[in-house]
Length: 314
Image 1 (tube, rainbow, N blue to C red):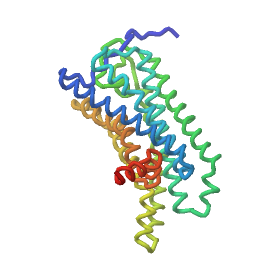
Image 2: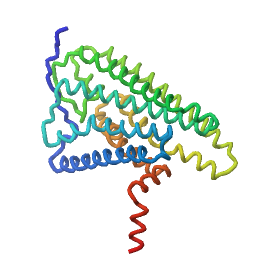
Image 3: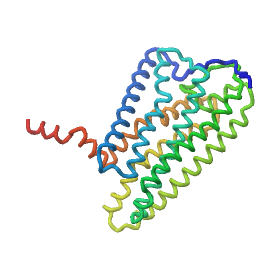
């Protein structure tokens, strides 16, 4: 089929402010990116090096950290170059960005779902936890997450190649996301929109159902415990995951399901920053602060106790 696309590039006009504000935003997002990379790499290194963390829960957390690095790297490097370089992104580059946003975002959704099931199994079926969450099953879940996400990304990205973009080519956003790109099409996007909603709702509904069902069972089990300390200790193992789920799902839902309005560009940017940029940075911080095992492993790896002992001795 002959390529009818007349637009060869798009212009990303997100954060198009005056120079002082752009400088502030550049350093802010640069710092966020560095913290994201270092924080998630630290989580991966700690989990790999500490044998006490070689369990299904931390297996999924390690993959979540790797995914957060990929997720933020899809948009942040290009965003940083937009501040002082060309705001253009090629047609192929824009399509690739759409694909990888779908791929990484959907994979993160499924991994968070698998982590909820892991917590349900550990708390509600402790006697069968080792048999259920064995290494083969965990790898199968992870492989399925990438396979389903790849299919979801292709199903939603390939139909975009059939659209005609004849201008304008300005995207009032800092990245090429599916809704922003469809708004520029000169041809009918009904099929694209329906495909997006059907596949998105199917994956989201399944994920939300599993997470809600898991936490309903977890809360029910916790409430039956006699000791208040046992209740707190048990639920604290889920608190990090629950916070991450609320941050990711809440902002992603508001970004993609909110109706189009005259002020939606600013609102969309805010929510996109939260789930595309802030959440990958906050995830390792949340798990480091809220999970005792991770906190202890980080201190052990960095020699925190040895350092403090040396300071006290001096």
